[in-house]
Length: 114
Length: 111
Image 1 (cartoon, rainbow over the protein chains, first blue to last red):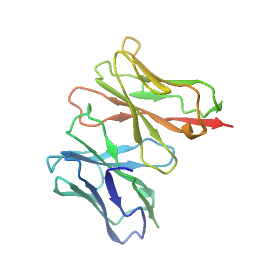
Image 2: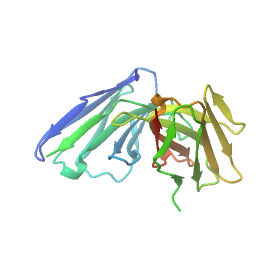
Image 3: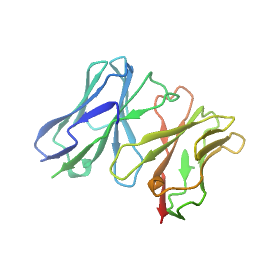
């Protein structure tokens, strides 16, 4: 079982809705990530938090808004999404920020935008 | 040239056979290498890290060739449960903060 917990597992939303994805880890990791994955594609990095501070934003549209309330929690707020935003959204954590660290992924939220 | 390249497959392999796939990376400064396994509609899970000296974990062996800039994964005595997509993942180095994922190799083990 993964030690990174994501909720909800599935989400269907309209283009005018506001929703949030949640992620939690209790491994004491200080870096947390949001990835987006389309079918048959590799995960694409969206955001990285290190010590609760946003350190990377890979030019993601403003309709995606990350939040890191504390070292264990990571949220992704969604507003006015487009159908092409439908994808698997994966949260991950690592002990520290840095490409040498192993990533531990949550089971993801399968998002459908209608 | 793409940063991390893998043959997407699919590789159709009979149960019990040995299968190997390679992954090439473009950045010679890359420092860390991993193989992740991903099942359909599931999250990637770390299969193994890849060390310069090569490493083995049960039926799985990973090798790194820095001179030719490729890593390999060998699976011996393949099981039906090995069917999955195998992602090659590289730390590009240079202070980069994210890992670079290959597109994955799809493996199908046939009974």
